[in-house]
Image (tube, one colour):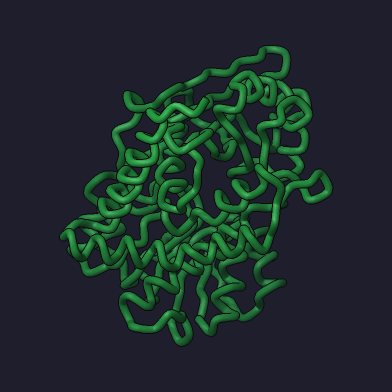
Length: 356
């Protein structure tokens, strides 16, 4: 999976997990524990090979570290990927075998849901490890993290509107949402409630049918790529990473890019191309931190009100990043990275103070 980061050498730990009996093949990547235990979801995906899975785990774990830092959390960044087709390969045996590997890390890595995994899966993983969040409410968890992830993206989008158009609202704006999974479909609801016109697309007809039934006012399409050149104010990539290529940056009609997908930039030069084209880009690891904030709150006993209040701060953190980018004369991605690394370095240095 493409990434704007140079990954691998800076990671603290990478664990390859293989269990022949269950068919488990997984990779757990821990980028940093400078701020606390590495927290990040488990992605279940049919990667073409192990190299592709490794690159995705490395890139995602670093993004999680930056996400936690920008969100003000006392957690580091980690990510796990399970290689396989979740519709075919997922089983209780495999998930419990994976849970044993998570437990073997002794709390250095805390897992949660991601693409291809759900709260019910985390309940199974938790039968073998206590280092599991994103569990079902029936098991004392916070439930689907897509709820607050979508809310955080919406708050980031409101901040972009404030920065660019002088009002923290999407009323009267036209927003394109590419991908209608856990986050995208909930974002559609938030936008419609705020008075925006929404055009949304997904390759999955079932996803389109769900959104149509819930939000009949949304304009739906079957080709997400068509949204790139659509006459919209905001483009919101909410599917898998790498959606923003140099070609997309050149063809994009929207003035703002703000979405829920991880690792949206296909390479390191795309954010510069977006800036040169006059497109305001909200770094994904800043605006899609709502799910991370939610599962982080679950670690010590979940409070939805407290978690939602934390997600509300994404509005201010997005404005901070955009303001820092303008003041320093750098792209928003560089600005967010600088702010994250500054906090990771500063707080991390406190570890030199011995606590008996």
